[in-house]
Length: 333
Image 1 (cartoon, rainbow, N blue to C red):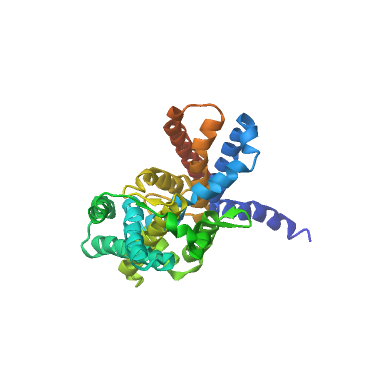
Image 2 (image 1 turned 120 degrees about the vertical axis):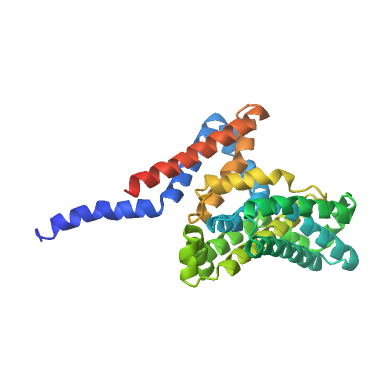
């Protein structure tokens, strides 16, 4: 007994160290989230101890969080997609066209998702077959998709009030036991994306491609197919998010999505995903989205003006990234 005790004692710190190193990103974002929410509760208890504000978060945050989840996987591979705000609107062009033609919300939804997938496929082909850097390519397609949307609808918006009569409307943006369906869709998307990234070959390939593309090629990983698939998933998510947003406000306007670029990217990077690829966390992105979504409400609730929004956005990003870096440095050495 005495012979095994000294060996077992130092093993526990090593196990804790390995655990902390493996989960450093999740620990960092969860800590930052808890601290931020504690500050909001202390400074505005009447708002943040009630349920109304959380119902509001559950309804509005999914509009960019749903996109952030597959975009996390794109960034894990070392790529970037900045065209998703325009895809949100372009997908709705497909919805409006088919819905007006058939009167079916279900068929319109299918059309929106198809358009989003094709837009993502277009991005993926540009990046993988033409070799255009993804940042440059998707800046270009962001303008192209937005311009195409404006041309196709002649710059007009469309009322979607009649969609409320369809049973599909309640499935998409209604409520389930008092919980907004937008949040239900977000949870389902988070679970599916986590499984893809952590329990599926697609996610394993994404990590290897992002960490070392040459090694991935030598291992026989289908690099092009992996990258294209992730661009397609991001396009699908953007079109679906645009659909949820439009149905909730029962209106489609061709400039929709313009305000979602920075919150989406902030949620991903606050969540610990590396801009250089090879490292990312779906849990981090999920929590990061609610951090970013809660900042504006928190600023108003504590009595500050809107001028503080960017200041606090920047502070939260810097603090979160610093926590990630410190934890990795502490536990990886």
